[in-house]
Image: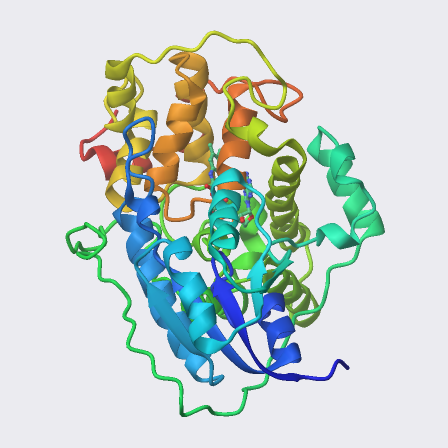
Length: 436
Ligand SMILES: Cc1cc2nc3c(=O)[nH]c(=O)nc-3n(C[C@H](O)[C@H](O)[C@H](O)COP(=O)(O)OP(=O)(O)OC[C@H]3O[C@@H](n4cnc5c(N)ncnc54)[C@H](O)[C@@H]3O)c2cc1C
């Protein structure tokens, strides 16, 4: 084991907002006797994007505030102080490092352009000689453990999945012990409120399929409930295409997206469930879906900014429309399809939409209305509680026919409604009228 340094290590939290199974925090604690943590609510995340949507809307913002409240408490119990700023990191970090004499910074490795730009600005602002230790920690299969070169990630999911399943191992969870208590660090930074970030307080919609709070404690409770208490995991493969209620799927995505829970923790709990209760197609299928999540991260690692380009990773030269009234009809749930409308209203009222819904509304946007798919993706980015850059842009490219779908399918939204909402329950819920 490495010898600990009597210096302060800084953990800069971004999308790894947990103390449980956090390899970055673990590495920092292995190397230093004192750890300080920092988190930024970056004002850039609350501005309008190039299509006129707020980059982060109220649902994900409130979830994030709850997440940071929980993180602060959990870090405190390990004797780690979390400093919180509503500012750009490049305005704060240099002085922070100087004030505490910090030389080592630990952070999750991110590769998408906005995250890289911020990090580059921070590095450019630093006057001393601090080292940035960037660690991959958002994967199920860590990039250092797979036997595929990033440039050779298969274009077809199945080829990727079969290889990683055959040749790679999932790492164990990291466990932490509390550090020694430090009395001398004073911290008067505060978590901004929803109002500070530009939003009114609001109540969760009564029909929301995602009525849960942010934070790793809520994530672990949900996992325990879905797996070990209600044992709904046993039926996951049968129910996962559902539309109504909290239990048709795991609902773990919002916590996964901001790193309140690791994919590894979910994986090892599936294994525990399989040992203690049942092992069946459903238990495997949750892992299968986590591999999809990994896959889109590998696609973005391989293709960089191409995932944000209109012709996607396939460089397909389609013609796309940008008709504002068609876009407004879609976002407001006023299209010719009541199934699409119900899903879009659900998203607008709650920040959540099922996977079945997302596939349909995205296909309708890109393939029926032939609208520039990046506008639909940007709207999802604003609204979704579980927005994740790789899953969002990867899935949108896939549905729009510029990504990884070898069959380039178009959903028939009317048939989909008949199949998945045969009695109209879901449409009734959100359109508040009796169908049929
Ligand atoms: C157009 C479109 C946009 C999407 N945008 C996002 C997004 O921004 N963030 C996000 O997390 N997911 C996104 N998804 C994927 C998927 O819809 C959600 O992950 C899923 O609905 C979350 O619900 P759950 O946690 O109950 O999933 P479950 O069915 O319980 O699945 C378990 C986990 O597997 C992963 N997963 C499942 N399906 C997918 C998938 N198709 N792609 C990648 N990972 C998957 C998720 O991490 C999920 O939490 C998108 C899908 C589409 C079609």
